[in-house]
Length: 126
Image 1 (spheres, rainbow, N blue to C red):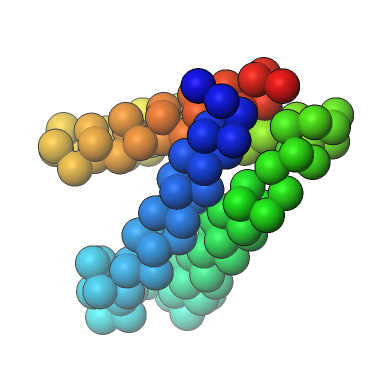
Image 2: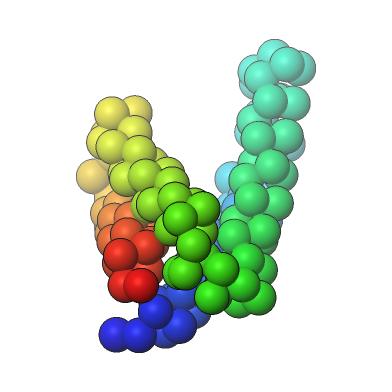
């Protein structure tokens, strides 16, 4: 698969997770379900989620607008490997803290693994 195609997959993956995280307020019935926790915890969860949306959108834009720079420079490849590590770590923490046997959780685990693989492939394709 070409580097351009791999970076397009990285962008789609990142955009998908940005949209998924934007839906958290509806999916998890925030802020009603967060009302049971403290104000700092409510704020931290929602602020961290907004920041993740920003990061995922930024990654998608970078993959779409700067494919040559990402695939053709040491800094770009380091960034892609860093994103692969991000998804690998997300997968590991899924198993550590979200020990739920549910098809949606398993699908998310596959999506995290896919992110780790696609970003690593994009980093090594050049």
